[in-house]
Length: 379
Image (cartoon, rainbow, N blue to C red; front, side, top):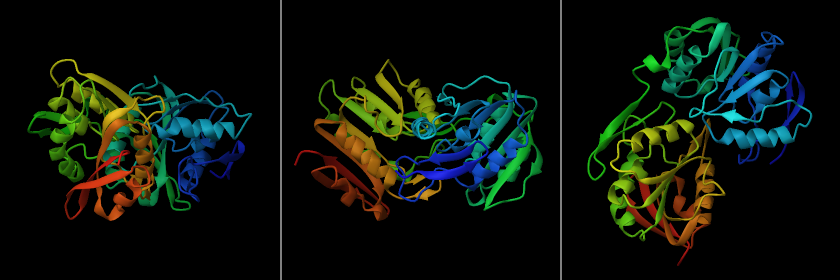
């Protein structure tokens, strides 16, 4: 990791982007524009909420104010801690809340990174309406190329737009007042689909979760292999649904072997909240554990079977860097004789990447777009 210098109103900030490819910065022009807009609107007594800061640039850039940070991604807490350590002397609250444990309002100013998903943006704006102080303002910003389709319509349905600031360096900031739309009254808060077969239940998810309203086609390739894989797990064995999303893989494993212990891990707090809801539809009281985590936590146990459909994009960055981290973590947490069953896009060449971490890699299923692999540390 190489420090880069971010010019903010609090001074020069040395920032890193942990886990990112060389050359990727921990901030962008949208962070710069949001902080400039906030500086002209902040009062000494303002209570500020930062939503979905990426790597800590916004939280550090508002140091010295009464700032609460809320993020869906489990990447932020470690990134913020790393960047605070590089900038001693700043008064920064290291606590990062998430959608499973939200802060209480009212907030005088909300500084929001606009997400790429329109439904998630609609959800956030409605939630903000419930915690915004009378007369409070929302500053919502992002890179223009990453703004969701229908963003103008999404804003108009949820809040009152007062001003669209001039674009700068291909970034845009919108200044808003709160509206009357509330998230608890929004019919699109939960969306899902019904799975047939052993699971035979409806799975639902919140808006930040990938493929929340349809079965992902990669997961569709993996599901038929789960019965045989789960049958090979030993008694009192343990399974991990890694990068679990709505939890459909782990839920399917539980439907086959309800006596097994199944863990679910995802970088998104809305994904973990969705798994909690979906688990409530299963009969009995299965033994489960939920991890809001970027990858596999160091303190997590070893697993006899790890199920994985790795994401291949993080924000605006597309590639195999996320999968490589997940492969590394999976290899570290395989029990003796344990296996990873994973699906990936054919063009990403995961058979080569897997061999960096596992001695045995075999192809189980292939289609024009996807390949399913089984990997283990034993030959």
